[in-house]
Image 1 (cartoon, rainbow, N blue to C red):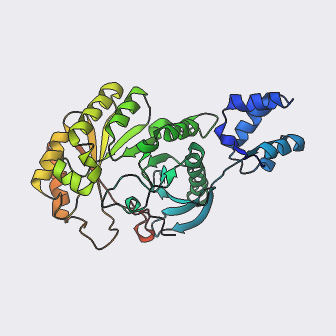
Image 2: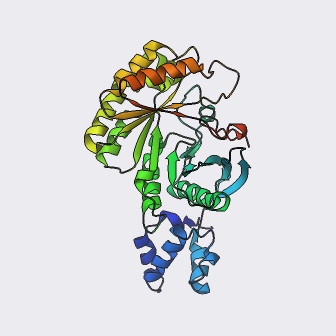
Image 3: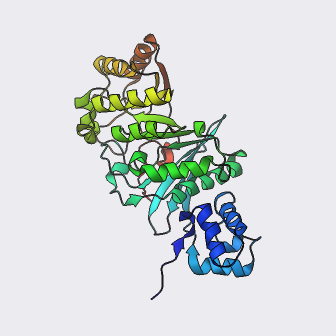
Length: 346
């Protein structure tokens, strides 16, 4: 019977040091291997050129590196790049590089498919197959960083967890990935340049606050009226706005960090004065800002971008109440790389 080899990136640095001691080698070899895995992004054990062939062969006998591969890449007219990422078990997720004049942002996935059922999102139509592991999330960032350097001549500046999946439904792995991304022994990125976007899982928002995370929080809100929100995001029936608000109040009391609300305005759904007034009330309990996001249709169905007059109404009413509001234009629409369009069509 052949024993299944262990994914080496599931081991801590201390465990790697212990492995080398147990096999009669020096503990510092574990430090070297750890650096190759996380800081240098080695895909194979043969990449580890300062480790003896004997030690590399021993690693091959005991472990695997379950590295991702960019299965295909599409480049948009606006410079956005969408990657189809093949995982070690053959499943696919998508990630996106979004370049602007001042920054390069990686939009990464946290699950294969999604366990929530937002009716306007293409990813929600995919069955959730599994959670991504920390190294699979980390690898997406490394791959996009390389693309940013290649095509934009600069490293990655920001990361958003707004790809496929609900990050808070894969909480532990997302946090482990962020720990590696922000560690000096990893990519050394500031947590202030990372935003985790959630559809709103109250108990997990509270857990984030208790864990004193340093990254930013964005909430995919889209309506501050329960009946409307439940219609477009049916899970809201189980996590109503009153619970979400309580969790966000708790978040702010613990972190004092501003909350960002992601908000799409649709024709005939939330393009009324009543909808804006409800949003204003929801924004009052903690410092926040609102990103009005251009909608990217996923079919010819009921969800259609609202008229400019409705967007202007939101802008005027929110600004009149001194609420920070911006309009976020979508990038990569021509390659289905914009918000809500990631669906593994490849």
